[in-house]
Length: 272
Image (cartoon, rainbow, N blue to C red; front, side):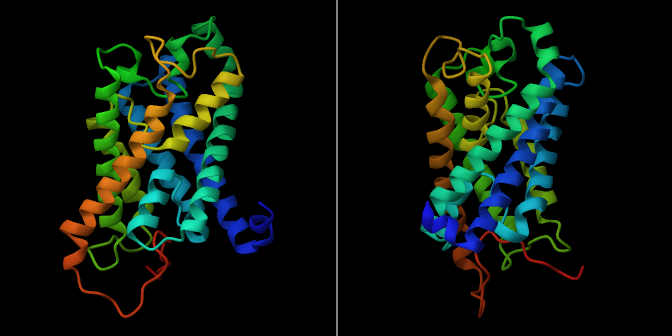
C-alpha cells in the first residue's frame, strides 16, 4: 500500500479508475432504480443507462488509466496485452471502491422512492444494485447464470480488444469509449435475462456491499437463499480471459506488428 501511495503516476491511474467506475454506477444503477421503483422507462432504458455509464466512465478515465472500469478487463489485458500485473490488484480495488461509492450515492438519492416501493428492502429492489439469476424471477439456476456471465463477458472482451486494437479497424476521433458503450448496450439487450449482465466483478460487488450496509439483509444471496455473490465475480474473470484469448488466437495473431505500441488499454489521443 505504501508503495502505491508513493507512486504518483499509479495514484493518478487509480483515481481515474475510481472516478470512472463511480460514473458507470451513477448512470447504471440509477437507471435501474428509476425503472424498478419509480416506474419510469423499461428494459431498454436500463441497457442505455449502463451503456452511457460505460461511455462517460471511459471518457473520464481513459487518458490516465485506460478506462478499464472492470477487473475482468484488467486481468484479461494483463494476460494477453502486456498490461502490468503489479497494477491488477490496485486497479481492481479502485474499481470496486468506485462502484461502492457510486451505489451509496444512488441509494441515498433514491432512498425514499425505494422505501415507498419496497418497505422491507427485499429482492424486489435488490437488483437495483446487484444481479440475481433470472433477475430474481425467471427459472435460471446458478450454473445457468454462471454460464451466462462467462459468455457475456467473453463477448465483451473480444469486442473491446477488436475496437481498441490500433492494428485493426479501431474507431478514430476518440470514439472508442462510445463504441464500447454500444457494446454494453447490445449485451444488455441480448444477454440480460439469465443473470442481469453484470459482466464486471466491481460493478456487482461494490453495489452489493453498499446495499447490504444500507439495509438489504439478503444482498449476498439469491432468491433461493444460495450465496450467489461469488458468481458475478468469478464468472466474468473467466469469461474475460476466454474472450481476450479468442481474439488473440482468431484475429490479432494475423494482424501486422507495429514498430512501436502504446500501453495496452490506454485511449489514444487524436487530432480528429
